[in-house]
Amino acid sequence: ARAAHAVSLALAALSGASASSGLRGAGNASFAGRGACGVATNMLDFRDAAMSTYCGMGLDFWWNWATVPRNVYSQSCAWKTFVPMIWGVDAANSRLARSGAAR
Image (cartoon, rainbow, N blue to C red; front, side, top):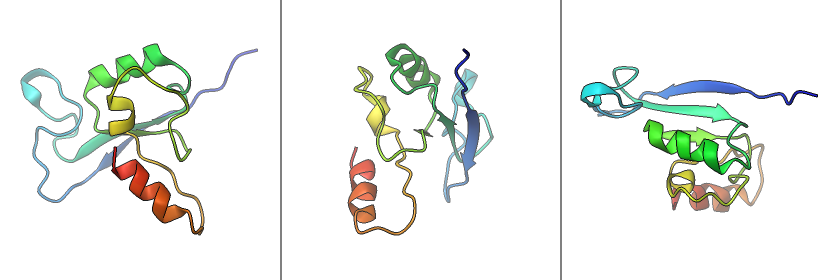
């Protein structure tokens, strides 16, 4: 059976963002021209090699629809660029948001 995977790119416009933020290619130009570029995917879950590829791409953030990454990755950018998804209203949401931002 084939596993289902989802990938989507997101672009967040940041006030004062430079043209060098986002997916970096030749000349450090941004993929989108401005802002931050990220990816939403479950294909990084439990796959250290996939995370290594992601970290080499220079994207600014990623998420997997969970509150934490679903692996202990060897790449330091895994936690540094992860954005926790917070669903609904819960007393733990403040702690989750702070833990994601602290990395």
